[in-house]
Image (cartoon, rainbow, N blue to C red):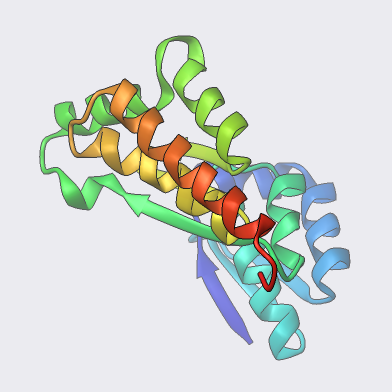
Length: 174
């Protein structure tokens, strides 16, 4: 038996929409129950619990269940950058989140289009779902923005990582 704590807003969504829990349960083949303190209890085979925990962690960081469900596939991963731990100032955290999202969501969309990774900016975190290469490319751009680099520099770094990954795929033996 394993458990995971998710934000109260996301736990409330699971409680209000039982079809979400049903989807995760059938996808991961384990039982799920939600306690009053937003702890989600998982019961099943170890790998089933592990898969459900990943899906629920991604859901807790703002992804919808269908996107989080990709984590059941062996070539998809989930990573998170906690910008709350990087900056003490609430104002600076909000600035960084705004830079990652961009005006009308353009920066986030561009990073997702070029890298192929999906991004969620939720709470004090920026999270990614994708293949290792997709996440590496998206993180290159987001880390540049977090460090205070320009959007142009962030895009250049991401695009360079994208070209490098494409070249490696094209080479025999990779």
